[in-house]
Image 1 (spheres, helix red, strand yellow):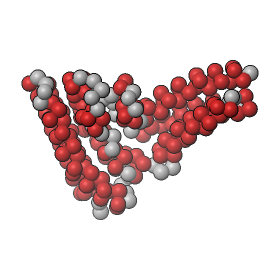
Image 2: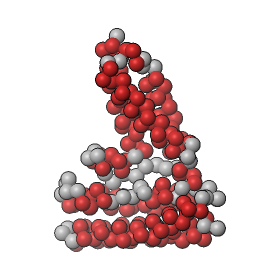
Image 3: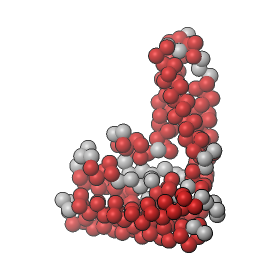
Image 4: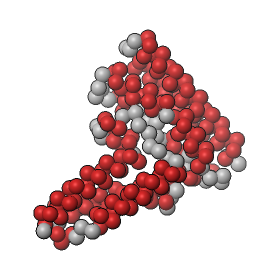
Length: 212
């Protein structure tokens, strides 16, 4: 029985970890799981509700496994898996980050791992960067649709500062692209300019529509 329960935990463990990275693909990239390169999460209401529904199903299956039927070394793993899902559910449903904190959207397009970790050829990393930058405009359109009319003022103030500084972060891509072909440099420039325009527009929207 112990072996069977341990096998069941191993199966659900893989499902939980995979599902976690659906909500946190940037964390996956930081951990070296490069199947998540170039991916941003679906932060629409429908998307996060779908994620939470699946997470609750995984938690129910996890809770069906009795500690007494697990090897002692796996009981802590079971607890950590529980916390992994519960943490994101808390952010979605209790703290309501994506409804009241504009910074939660601005933290998504982080290019640092692609810029400074030489885990792959420059062309491959730049391709992932372009995918991220291309997804910035729809990400921020979704933010405008989802964020509540009244937001905590410190959140809005800090978000404006972050958005104002993001073009400088995006501009770092140009240095990396200098070693690439002219067509690649053109693709990077176009993606960067589009993303910069989106964050600049978002900062202006926060100031005009939410700061008051």
